[in-house]
Image (cartoon, rainbow, N blue to C red; front, side, top):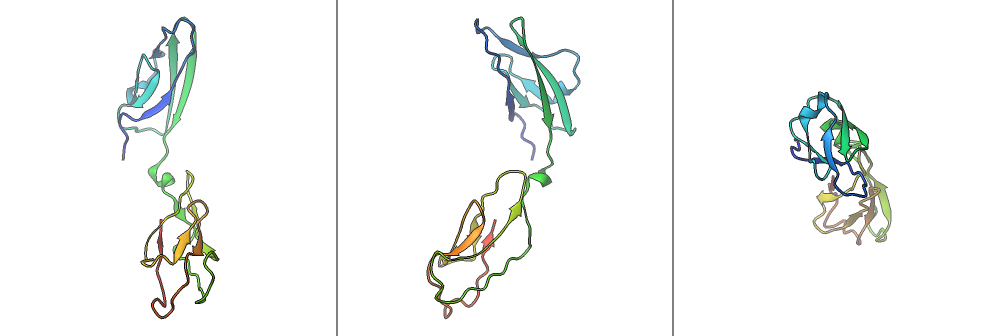
Length: 154
């Protein structure tokens, strides 16, 4: 998914006269993929990004100032979190107290991960800590009703 018109960065020059405009320094090849708002200094993605790295120089027009901007394009596969295991299995005794941590799931990703149990727990027996992936008992389990549950976490 490409985010055309996505605001990449905000270049700002503090000036006493407040009549600052912005432009790309001339002679740069990487500017074709981006649009620079000359009044605000906001830099947007204009076209599909085909390279891994872009180097731009943005000039503040008030007689002074040059900002160098380096943009690294990150592959979508790097951004998608990956669980350290494909399957996690936890055995829990009937009568285990609510609040007891029975295990945790772990994923690695580029950004902080928020864990969520999205299916497999129709009676809400379990709770998952969104920040660290710890799964705990939310209410007493009924082995007569549920001998096994498959909790799906994302």
